[in-house]
Length: 128
Image 1 (cartoon, one colour):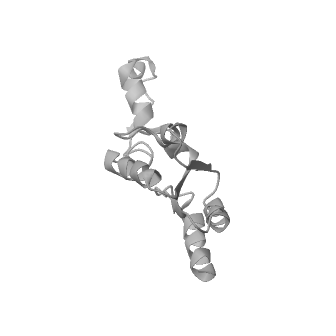
Image 2 (cartoon, one colour):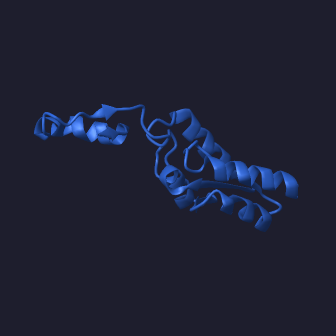
């Protein structure tokens, strides 16, 4: 069974490995992009959200991950314009609706969203 960093932490912290069948092998991989995101990247996202006239957009999982200044959810609670996306495609719509703001999509490299993110970039370039 392959698990990410968050799962590995809980398994080790609570001694769950000792309770598992001996024929079950856990493969502790590098983790998902959310679990292994460097704090500096999270801090950069928070700093971008703090810029005047900016909107930072991210998929829901990244909104919860705290950096040195807090999470993007906490930034939102402080009045910064940090928004959840359900799809990278929404980023282009938000940009169209806010032509006088700096709209920033905090894309982190989920392999399931990479093709959609690439499509958004291509469409944004076409639409200038």
